[in-house]
Length: 166
Image (cartoon, rainbow, N blue to C red; front, top):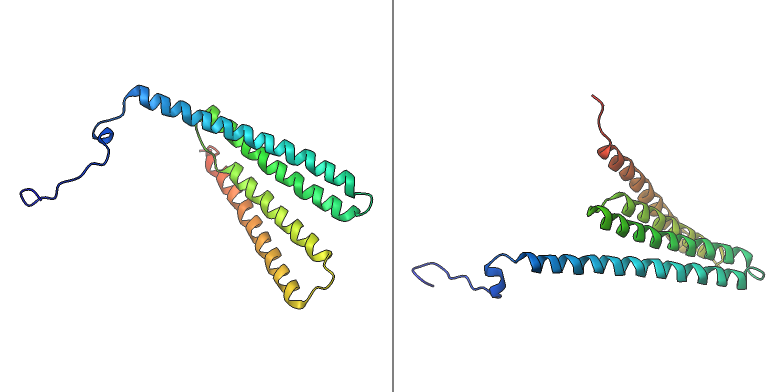
């Protein structure tokens, strides 16, 4: 303590002054490359999942048609989620603005995937007890409510960006 006032301790001397333009420029370029590499990773992973989904479908469709179709739909919805994330990154790199709508779409797709997955699981169980069925209904109802809430959120988000007529 100095003169009754607490002294502030600085951890890094770099924060004693504003960062210079070249330092900020370098950090922004690195940030951009981070987004680019992440976006390309989403695209590559989506392509791998797409190819694997069709490969698995072709192998199993003859012996287990319904599970093969459900698995393909489930995997293709995952591909859509990955492509939507890729598209969101492209839009961010173009505009430097993160928008809410793509994430709402991703959540709707994810909830739909969950509904399909649990529905497929329950339909192929050997024995479905009342407890399992009630848990399935709660999960289904919860996901339906999430989808309804997200659709309302998409509507509200779109209304918020539309110019108002006077």
